[in-house]
Length: 454
Image (cartoon, rainbow, N blue to C red; front, top):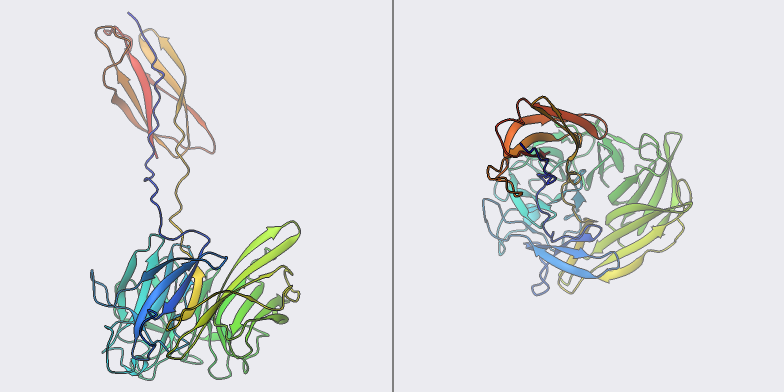
């Protein structure tokens, strides 16, 4: 009787095959209003998401729907409302979110004057494949005024910011979930006229130029979904001057909370830098960028230098359109004046189009690491009992397989599971074993292997 150990070891992972994504990680995406043909108007223009490299090279444009399709609503925007179209990337990096109006082009009324019951305020969501979702159309938010921005932690929960003149459908900050048409008002206190909402380190923030209560504020604690939440100003940030739009909070020192803030302010025509020192935000100076409103940033470290790469946008509010994409690198680090004084224009909007918000391109879901195949490292025979010994990767489910060749051929017949599932746990590579009683009897040959899945 011959007993053979097959060395054909198989490990089967469950990770899907990666598909080419329309968006390239690390690129920028700009919310653009206008098709370049028709004049911009407050009665509505189409919206595009323009992908740019960080050198200002246009990669592609994705047009948002202008008619209802696949259960979603149209999403258009006012061509002349400079406060609309702010763009954010989800906290998990997987989606871009933004707002617009759920109606077709060619309407006779000014979009911002419409009621949200007649023209819903639509939340747009786009993933890294360029898949557009416009199924969330709010009928009780920003009525009679502008929907301006949206933020999300995971692409399902949304916080929106805007203004509103109808008591039953106000502006301020509201919460909604994917596919619904009603929002929960989170805060109109102390103001109901909000520009940017954004999430940093699990906390919701907002900007406004309304009133004198705050300019950049923290919205309650964490990510509130109920009503009557108060927005508190960031201590040290002036509350009665400036016109902030988008902003970025960063952690440059590795502490428990963000310590560096950049704010796009179109009144001061600058990107203003603040640092949190002893719990109070202190101004470090500014980078000139005329009319700036959209803003995003990323951080890199080169030697001893901490570099903040800033990208910003501005867009015209006239029928002729226009706008700029800015870039600047602040290498000064925490609590120091910016190392540059002027942002550089790296791209411009075409005639009859206007830039609005900006964010980094969404990325795909985090995939598990490749599954390492198990390795058979030994086989023992005690009487007729066969014990198979192998090394396996933690977090896998293993199955013992066997095949027999009645004619004694060196090529085994089809393998089949004879034991499992065997769950493998541990901090590192795990050595395990399994015994087949009488595995060495009544067979001219016996082949073994391990099948593993995650």
